[in-house]
Length: 273
Length: 273
Image (cartoon, rainbow over all chains, first blue to last red; front, top):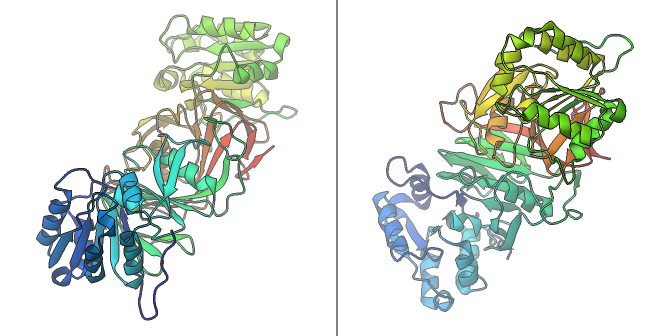
């Protein structure tokens, strides 16, 4: 699934992948910034709790966003594919200034939302200006090529990552979360070396990339965003490597970006303030 | 300690850091290649087991190298600083075609060998053509700036690595071992961002960099050598970061090199065959 084109006169809304475990009480920088973008008291935030199998995930975020100043919040009750076809839910998405996709299992998101009117509406609304944030599984689903699993460690292998089609709000990023905490360099390197048109984004917990409508992001939160840019890659042995064998990749660019740093995805340039 | 200059008419011997746990029985590619360089039947390999606290480490390697075809092997009995001052041992080093430094604790190597005639002799002999290999702790000690500890994970921090002076056979590399197996990206990134004149080498287990006298290495073994080249680094926040805080580093070059790949350390270029 590809990003929807923005209709004339509309700017794309922010796309905000978050690495999971975002701070909710003491320094909720990320969630507060999201609520601010969505309009604070004017904010109408729709929550998609589908990745989670806990009953109260949607309700918890409804309450949390209201405590952070959002005027209106509503959690879409989507637990099965049939729910995602409910036309009544589409009006909520049409009216939303922000959409928040919770954590859980990203395969629940892709299997339940994939190909439904809700998935289409999220892409369309983002293209028209609605901000879309997702944490953990909700961050993974944002990209066209979504990581669903893989090996831990540093060195990429031919079988080091599993990909599935995501929601497709962004098509050149491949996004991983809990990055530093779960040692996920190997799977992100595996993904970018499958096809070096991809840019790898490894998001630490409590860390987000706020991607604006110029395709430039700012890092917000307490950890780092690791960027792997393979655009100068001269060689990868991915196609020849046998299962489990270490893969050679030559000439990757690596940036470690903490709060306040920026990355221009289109031009592939990192900078501070 | 800096590398000794090579006397006229002499080429520097190979410098061979190995990431630990090198295969000894089934496919002992690394050790076999080392024995070959040292002259096979003409090889005279001196082992330095000082890092290890096991009684039989030296003896095991003596036997192993002979089984792999080395003509003569001898383990230097150095357990204390006083042993490293024994002039009789120097003759063994003078006669050696190869020196092998075993694994164990790199701080035993630096505290026991540092500043002794043996340390000086290893540097001088390497400059005159003797090949020097070291595995695990023996690999760490090879560089001028030696990693002795640090945090696991990916993202560097101001306190993410501990350095101590090493043997100084090579002065621009900082070497880490068990790299993929122990998730040591964070400490290697911390080290290179302390001072970006350094090039970081992360050696997986059963993987070696055979550095020739032109300062070019070939990768041998079953894993990968991760190279972090910060020479284009535009910015690091290392000097401003507070303890434990994620550090920003912009524009690193990253290569993952498996067997048969090469890296030219002087010109900072990776290539295959």
